[in-house]
Length: 175
Image 1: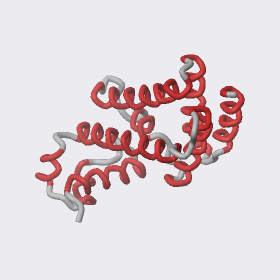
Image 2 (image 1 turned 90 degrees about the vertical axis):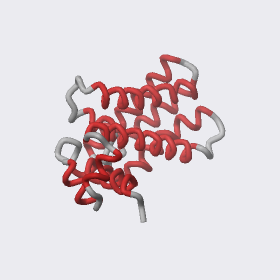
Image 3 (image 1 turned 180 degrees about the horizontal axis):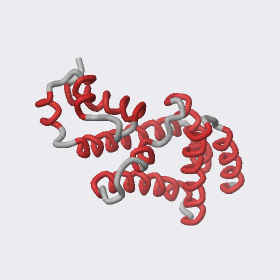
């Protein structure tokens, strides 16, 4: 059986994906995770702290999935191009739920520095990921922006069409 902390995080992932951050309350998380209130507060002082941990876990999971997906690629250019296939894979796996970080961003107050800094860190890591692969600041930012917009557009339209178009653009850019 999973620990109370694991059940809380798993339940949080499901509820945030289904209902969003603001519509999910601590009482619902406690109830659906089947944990005692004291257990919840033993691990998380607030919903905000839970959100930070959720985003940190999501960051590790997402980059783990990305690296695993791209591990078969031999060179940087192939990794960059296949990163767009990864988006298709994640859309199929998660039913076009989009970016957890941007979904949360759309619900928090912009002065919530605690959560905002985790979101910014994730996006900076992704931006840096492309820079490390390509080594060209302008080109890597272009790829990053195509990647990010592909996530958003695929969520909005529940379609991988613009991911495929972005992949073609990126293929031309890196050759």
